[in-house]
Structures are given as structure tokens and as C-alpha cells.
Length: 221
Image (cartoon, rainbow, N blue to C red; front, side, top):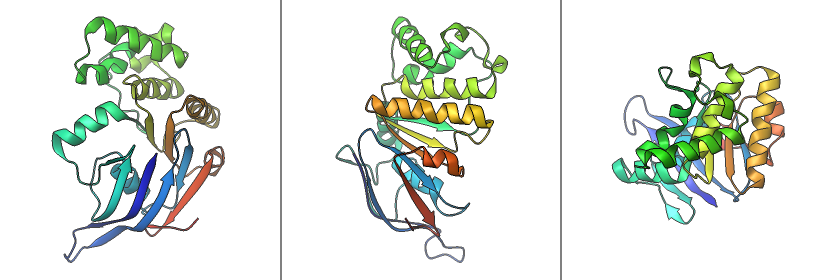
């Protein structure tokens, strides 16, 4: 379970360019829930995702993931938390184009210090779940956009993460591939994985169990 408790985020606090990105935001995400976070550009969506992902810290309030208060963890503690608990999926893929599909999926396991044989076995299993096992040795540059995003999902899952944070994951995909990605997320929640999706796409948001809309840093619905 994720609990966001009275979270406010202010950039450049007290300065001439002070910006309140989030303003007293509170909500709970249940295990195995598929949650959409929507809102216009600048509404605080990505800021909120960064706080849940321990990529940033709130000015006020708490972010609690599986009973662990991650509100102010930093450095190696934050990195270790991300490695063992979270998977990230981004609009821009962020795949290493010089490497094969398999090596890209193995990267999180390398960071965890997992041995070569186990890395390969786990990465192949993750790719098989995404329907891409036959592409394991192919350079990622030879994949379509939809295939690249499925590689990203495999990479996010391979470390055993119970929480996937997806920032505009369908933004670079056509409607068919975008719908397919949302269906993958739906199937993952049936296995107990929690998925939080930031999206501008109304149709994709409506696939989710619940929608939280942000406006000027506040929850409006």
C-alpha cells in the first residue's frame, strides 16, 4: 500500500521564483491497483511520481510505501530502495541502443549484483512474459516503438518490483500499441503488482481502476 499524506512540494522556497508544485496532496493506493494520475502540463503529475519513486523529497508531508516512510531518504538509501522495490517505465524508453534487448533487461540485475547465469534466466523469463523472448539477442534499434516499450516493462519487472511507476508510457505509441501497453499493466495488477500511470490520454486513464486528477498541484477528483 502507498500512502500520500499531506504532501506539499515547493521549489526554490523563499526565493523570487518560488513554485508550489504540489499543495497538501493526500490519497492511498491499494496493492494491485491500476491508478491513473491525470492533469494538464504543470499540474504536478511528474513531481508526484518522482516523490513516490524516491527521486525527490517533499517539502511537507509523508510518502509511505509498504509501511516504509521514504519521504526524506536520499543517496544510496534511496537508490537501494528503488532497485529493490520499484520499476520505472518512461515515454522516451531510455534503452541502451548499443546493447541487445537481453542486456537492456539485465541492467537492473547487474546493479543488484546478480550473477550472469541468473541474470540471463530472469531476463529471458521477463521477455517471455512480454512476448519478446525471440528478440532477446536483437539490438534494440531494430524494434518497433511498441516492442521497445514492452522491453522497458520487462526491465521494470525483472528485479521483482511490486510497484511500477509509468510516466506517459503510451505517449510515443500509436493507439493500438498504447492500448496493448495498458492491457499489460492490467494483467500485471492481477498478479498483485501495483501500477501508477501518469497520462494525458483520457481513454487510457479510463482503463484504470481509479483516476486522480491534479490541477495546480491539488487533487480535484
